[in-house]
Length: 186
Image 1 (spheres, rainbow, N blue to C red):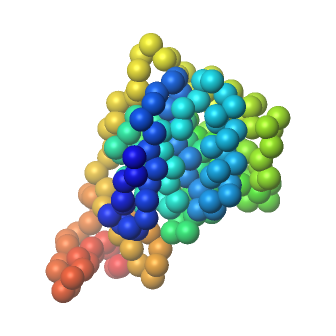
Image 2 (image 1 turned 135 degrees about the vertical axis):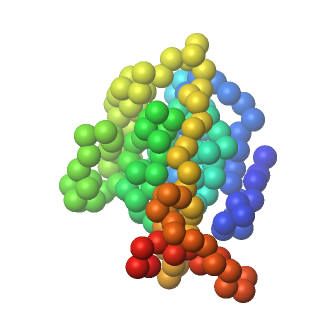
């Protein structure tokens, strides 16, 4: 089935089948998404439930699904993968593998993220996936994690997507076809 994201108007691809580890691929490059999908298909424990091409689509899909594993590109058309991560509640967020170049990973080190370096090949793929699944404590019998997310407002300014914590917004104002969020001096 295909879903259309209200934010981008682009298609989000969903799978109807379910194996074990529900996997979401978020990447702006069609060739890389295809390569990651093929690598997932080679493993009987991974089921790709959705693909997204932008951060806004990823947020929509993560909130609407029970993904256990997130293969997240470090560079998306509307934001970086690193900008997306802080807005996922740790208890409900899927285990994450950042797909990036080695240089990008060195610039944004994180103890909580596994890395998969481009170009991705089969031997390189399995170890971080196994580690992310093991570290997440994913238990197939327990089912999907609870989807509880903090209240946020997603906004756009100069072609970039920003996340605002709802409690930081002072007020919202109508501006024709838009809504302007006032946060501090912005």
